[in-house]
Length: 508
Image (tube, rainbow, N blue to C red; front, top):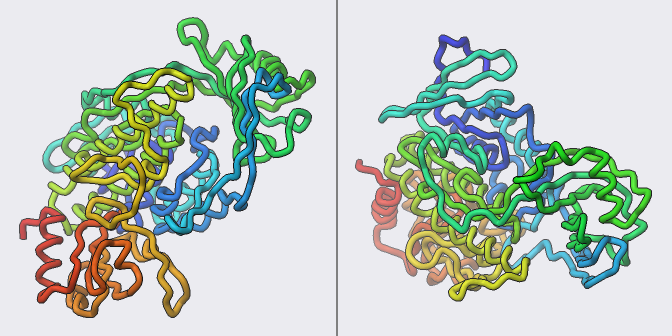
């Protein structure tokens, strides 16, 4: 960011935080014609694979962007891969339990996209490359130091941590994607609700050859019960690179107490390999907690990702939920900034995403209690993973169903259906992404093409969407169903115009 301290930089959207959620938001915005500015106080993207897997729904959302091929290629897992899950004193034993499972990465009946096993430290550079290819400016070592807002926009001050220069950014909107300790959230005075802390942990990323204690299939995850150095060891998406995490009593110790010599000795004990020579790649302290912001924004400032919701890592929902926030918020901001929607549309971000995030955080917390063999609350209901990742819904009804059954109802994810066409086999999801889409089963809907939406007259999708052969379904840019009609109507153009006007809070 090269602006002179006395100058004011004008941008449509200022994003604070260059993690997964900040980058995803900028990418979704860019593909809808809005170039955001990202500021990040650190020197680069994450060095640690904190989030290590991304569900099919997340990959579906990225599918409509230029990052699609790189994400799926980098995180591909061969179908039929088998991994082991161990509970033992150390990796060398004694063993309490050992089981194997086949990694199911592709559910072709539910999604055209696979689960990708990809560390945050590898996904963030992919997203960074993608946003820069779309003309987005990313300023590392730049820190938000304050902001004010009025009816016209947000005025922010940004510190260049290398030079000490302070510049001013005038943005129409600001997004705090700045993590669990979010200064943006704190500045807004937004409180959090939830069960709170489940305890602090410390993790280290290390490289080592663990083949002396490997079993018949590669180790995926181990719970180790050694009385002095217990914790977990988890595989990453890079060969011979592992994460070791253990509980940390923050009243007695800090990360600085875990020296290289201490980690080395600890890893030798917990692996059972006395002469292990690990290469350490960094340590960080983190808190497992369930906290959800009481509001996901205030005025022209919004919260997304960990700034809006913190959840235990059980289930792997946290980063995925943040990227889903990004998709929801980005299309709405783009619609308002491009003059297609009224500002009231942005109020639906909190109304839609906060109930889903709270329900998802609750599921992660219940899984954490179950994993710790603690008693669940009497009213606890554990739902299927697919219900969390694919089945969440906006509007009326519970945010998460107990089981996932695609219905095509308004407020739910538009179902995946394979369509055969002249160019081969494609998913209905390939038709969505950067604007409103009307799936139609009859040429009677063609008159709606004169409106700002794309019409696809195709066949074979209707049953999954709960409409008749000649019906239609209106799908939002984030792939959620906005409205549906069972059969053709006399004046499709007029109907769609009125529907979009209501959906987009337009007063014209």
